[in-house]
Amino acid sequence: MSGLPRLLGAFGLAASLAACGSLGGGDKPVPQPLVPAEAPKVAPAPPTAVTEEQQRIAGAYGGIYLKPNLTTLLNGVADRLAAASERPDLRYKVVMLNSPLVNAFALPNGSLYVTRGLLAVANDSSELAAVIAHEMAHVSARHAIQRADEERKAVLVSRVVSDVLQDSQGGAVALARGKLSLASFSRAQELEADRIGVQTIARAGFDPYGASRFLLSMGRQTELRSATLGQQPQQPGLDFLATHPSTPERVQLAVQAARAIGAPGIGERGREAYLDAVDGMVYGDDPSQGFARGRRFLHPRLGFSFVAPEGFTFENGADALLGVAADGRALRMDAAKLSAGQTLEGYIRENWIEGAEPGPVETLEINGMPAVTLVAKGRDWTFRFAAIHFGTDVYRLIFATRDLTPEIDRGFRDSITSFRTLNQSEIDAAQPLKLDIVSVKPGDTEAVFANRMALPDRAVDRFAVLNGIAPGEPLVAGMRVKVVDE
Image (tube, rainbow, N blue to C red; front, side, top):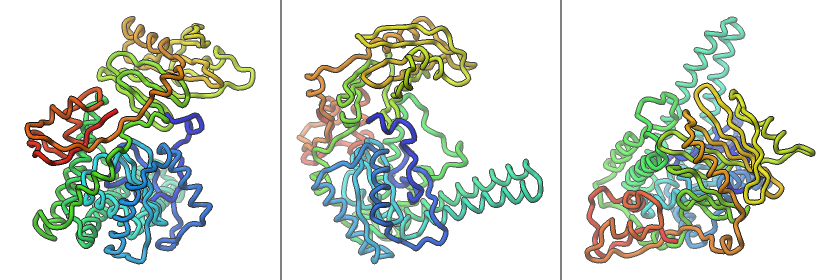
């Protein structure tokens, strides 16, 4: 929740994104591309258009992250891969995004984007190379243009059936079939990019098994994130419209592609150079975008904090702050503006949850700030809605539960009344978490490093996933590992 300008429509990026954050994706989808059918293979966009596009992407992902030595490594790997690719005439530029999400994607003009969340999951240069080579493959294989063609065909078939044959139900069926076909086509693109990427990193002299290692780490990171948020991992086969193959399938195919090149142990891994480059990198939420410390959320730049009810875990997005609890309770926080002459009471009456019946408005004063709250009951959910006038904005807190018991509602109200202004010393003390590269000493275990990790829960699991260490795998004295420090 980095700021007010991005609270609505933050992900309405322009339509030139190539195939979505595929090798590194999974946290947040990127809009599908809409590009002219006859566009050139890689036509550099006008400088102004590229700048505007980059600004929109940066705005949706927390801005550009600057770390010169890491930027140098990223682009050095990209240059090396480009020279060994099927299209050595193409040139690429890698930009880091200041987001904890695990994602990577490409523009057809050769601009490649990786989040620092993805860079934290990778453990050596060959894994990074696998991500970059995968995105390069999407560009060189013209996947964005192919996907746009498939989308047009799916829509055209449904229109022919519904408009020409006067069969609206048949048109809906045709469109559904088209979407299934398109989803399959997209999965085929991802697998093709995986295969091309493995071959490219091998030709560039990197370890071709870096792709399978990173995919495995990405899958474990996704499972850990789901467990932290109290969600069940998606079961294979439940989402027939999924645009990406399952992680086990991709790992298996990546291993097969690497074995076709040679046995494990070939190629350069570049672990030490990579760890040197990510040492000191910001981890998790950046305080400039707001961050959580346990159940407390602080936004030093906007100058407020509040505490979530017991059992909640935060997920900070570009357009809103979300929170979930294992028992199904949820919260959302964002900001809005009052219209000229509009009161808080009038605002909350006009902006309750759609489809829910609002109760009476209660007027409050929270730490010197005017506020209002009400309960709105829907068919399956009950909501506690609050609006707090803070500065020139209205901050909206929406809590949801299936059964609003007095105890649960008391927790919601305590959270609302915890909203307060940060003092200057709190703002000055707000520092991001960072990756610290340390060496393993004789006798060190995962638990030893977990105890020094500045993370609220599942520290052992987080340490293992962060370092690509299999459960129960012993640590070797002298090896360097990533830990999260304040």
